[in-house]
Length: 150
Ligand code: RB5
Image 1 (cartoon, rainbow, N blue to C red):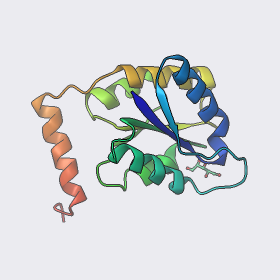
Image 2 (cartoon, protein in one colour; image 1 turned 90 degrees about the horizontal axis):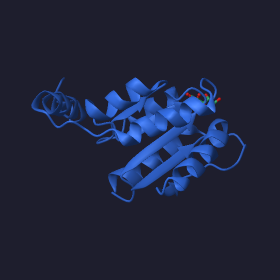
Image 3 (tube, helix red, strand yellow; image 1 turned 120 degrees about the vertical axis):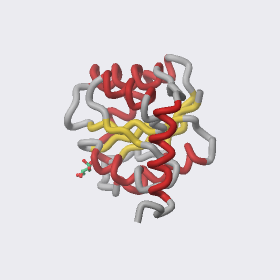
Image 4 (tube, rainbow, N blue to C red; image 1 turned 135 degrees about the vertical axis):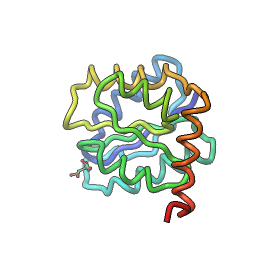
C-alpha cells in the first residue's frame, strides 16, 4: 500500500518519523513535503496529499500541522476527501470503520511521537465496514458536496 504524506513547517519532525516508521513496515511512501522549517501554508500540502489520494497514486493520506485542525479543515473542503483528526487510537479505528476516512490528520504540537505512531498504526490496520448504515450516512455527506443540502 502507498501512503501520501504531507506537513507544513510545524509538522516536519513527525512527518519524518512517520515516514521512517511506515517504510520499515513495508509501506510505500509518497512524500508531498514540506521538508523545510521555513514557514509554509498548510492548505498547500493538504491539497497535494488530497490530489495524490483522489488520483489513486496513493491509497491513503496522512497530514500533519501544529494541531492537525487546519489540515483537517482544508482537506475536508476537497470533494471525495474524508479527513479525520485523531488524537487517540479508538477514534483512529472508528474513522476507518464507520467513516471510511481516507486522510488522517495529526498535530505535532499536541501529541507525543509514540502515541502518534500508535494512532497511525491503528488507522492503517483498520478497514471500512461497508454495512448499509455507514454507507447511507457517507452517501448523505457526499450529497453535501454537490450543494444538495441547500
Ligand atoms: C502554523 O503556525 C499553524 O497554524 C499550523 O501548523 C496548524 O496548527 C494549523 O491548524
